Image (tube, helix red, strand yellow):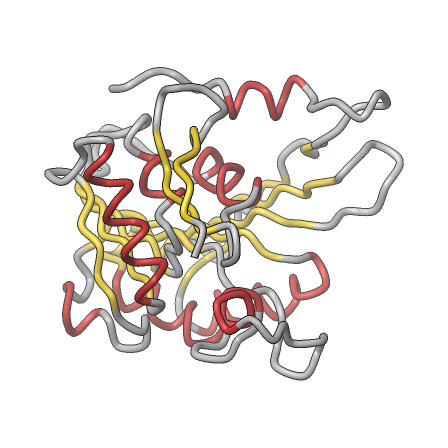
Length: 245
């Protein structure tokens, strides 16, 4: 398999190993890593469906918190471990090679301040399943459903901890219902558009465990490309993030 080492943010800030034949990280992961609320009191983070660890790697620019990534596919896990070592982040990022279902029994129930997830977007049967197993598992809910993910996030979070996720707008109603079912109150929602004249194709959503049911904020829209098909200043700001705290 052709493994390459790329720059996570298009510069030498962080290196990430990828397999060009497998499912590589996309802009979704960068948007989520930038969107998730990280504060001075954030000390422990879990990233579900970590893949080759783009979200944990980006989050190290924003926090010194301990980060645990959970990835079911051994090949993606191996790539993540290579990237963590390449960036000398072994003391901050820990990877677990396991299915996320019941992962709280292994890494700690009600102990995390933040859980993030860039999950498979499609239900089995919704779209053509890629014959490449790596891509199929990354894109379709073959090994874990959306409900499995929200339930596990709730079990991992401490009271008032936050769960942040990127997903597709056509599943927003389902996401809101699942958040409420598992005592995660939706608090921040942002619609992502490929261009200003196009329909929304992604959402970023964050909720608080055991939070008040009201108080949802809908943030200003996020546009990826401008009229010249170049990244907008909003996206460049995310990709040019430099500060290590």
